[in-house]
Length: 273
Image (cartoon, rainbow, N blue to C red):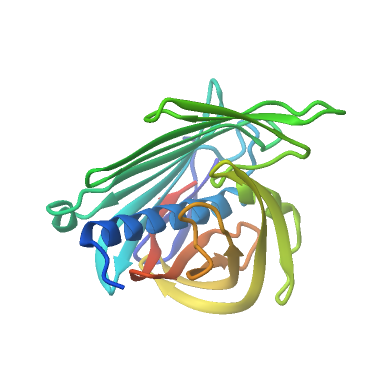
């Protein structure tokens, strides 16, 4: 397969065979928003990949996360072809100095059917004393019937069934469909995403083109703005912008978000596919 090495000096292609709030609440809200934001970045990354076995899998990307100009953590994206299907995993980890007072270890994983829609979606949140473990299972949609979706809160031992009239994505697999569409500046695209026990029709605005610099190098990019409204994901009072390479790969190289507890940037540091 073709390997893209990204580290420090750009891209290198080579042939390869292989009100006053409680401080803890503010920290929790910040890291949760960072994690979910990066999940969305990886969604966009994934729609630039083909899900069939042998089509450039595995892939792995590393992002530096900055808060107020300080490196506060690292996030990882990886996609593998496994026996249960193409598996996308994202991880977010706080930096050592942050972990001293507030340790973050967040994981989200989506397993896909062959058509790119999700089979299951798992989210595990560990931020200080805050914990979440949620599993969403997506059934196949009959031609003339609804799609069954089962939501399971592992920590609260609660399960609920939902029936959707149209197929839906989870937050990690959701933006795969966008790759099939032409992203035009000044236009919007729409996606159906099931998250936080609700079906959301997500608008993705295509804003402009811009050249930027990251630890991986300089890139010509196209800037998009997804308007997500589910639990903890860019609530209407916050916003997020994502910079994608302006080519057929549409690799996300930077994300910037403003939320109640401040702002952060995630910049591509290295990776290979």
